Image (tube, rainbow, N blue to C red):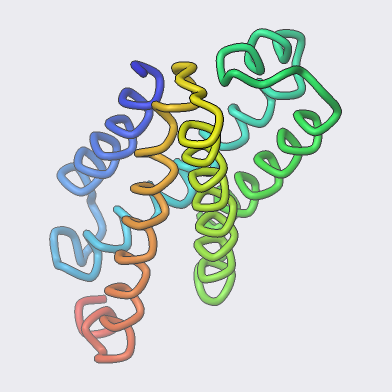
Length: 167
């Protein structure tokens, strides 16, 4: 439980501090703050996804599987690489904003919401109450949800010219 709460709060605290300490000319304007928060949830979340992926394929993969209530198998290897791939796309959005950011948010949303559905199915259908099965559900839902909302607001700001007006 603590891991998921701490990582989610890390994204929030990172975005908050970045917003407060930003030295860009457009600092503390709504478009700039939305952009920074979006970057933290997509790129910062990407780093967390890569770390999670490494845990699925690394030397402690059997212990990770046990903590989720799953058996260690070849599928864990595949999930690990999927987490790494989606995480890398998110991380690369630091330098590739436009439609690349859209792709990063779509990939994260599909992967994490699919994961959330799987964890809920394990909980309901099989009574899997393993800590890392249950406690990943809120972050698997909230992180992409926040990213989607921020991306929509960011794109709306860009269309309305707010972002260009403050730069």
